[in-house]
Length: 118
Image (cartoon, rainbow, N blue to C red; front, side, top):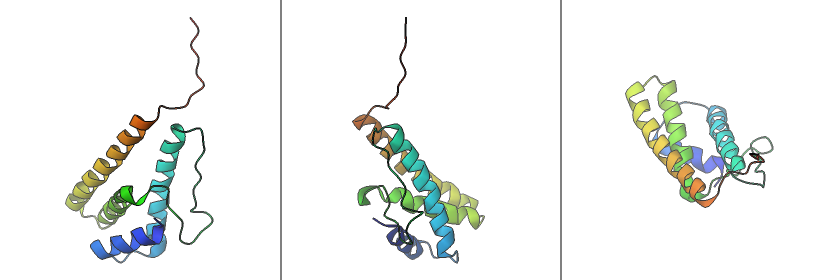
């Protein structure tokens, strides 16, 4: 799944006047948070593709792409000062994000180099 697909889907579902660059910035924010979370649970460091590409490939697979979609929708609602809609779209976003985080936690335990001496 790439950023252009998410932005196109968002524009279809939530028509808006925000430029492509603003939506890419919002996607970059959530992508950064997702990568940080993945790296906390993995020995293999995941890097962002946002700096090197006009249409970056996103880290999450298509099955989890609603996280990106609902984040964009909620940011549009916030920027439009539509706070009731923002609360609703943020609820959807948080549900999708927390479901994904639970799935990651079930699969992996955090990598850490902490040792406790007694």
